[in-house]
Image (tube, rainbow, N blue to C red):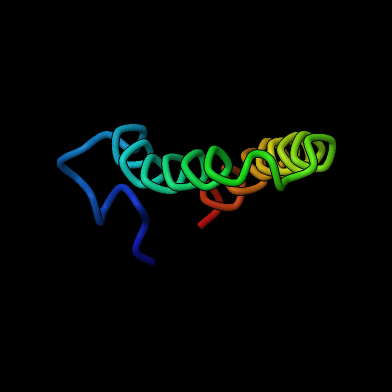
Length: 69
């Protein structure tokens, strides 16, 4: 089984994770900034909190599954 730490041995996982999610975060910010007037603020905030909540819930799940592999 190939794990993340074996694929990218030279870098710490937090550095690689930051480099991976940074372009997606910047693109999302640019899109939301450009279409700010068209997007409903209430729905945007609810979507952001829901996505954050789901991703925070996935952290222990992914962590425990990777430790048992």
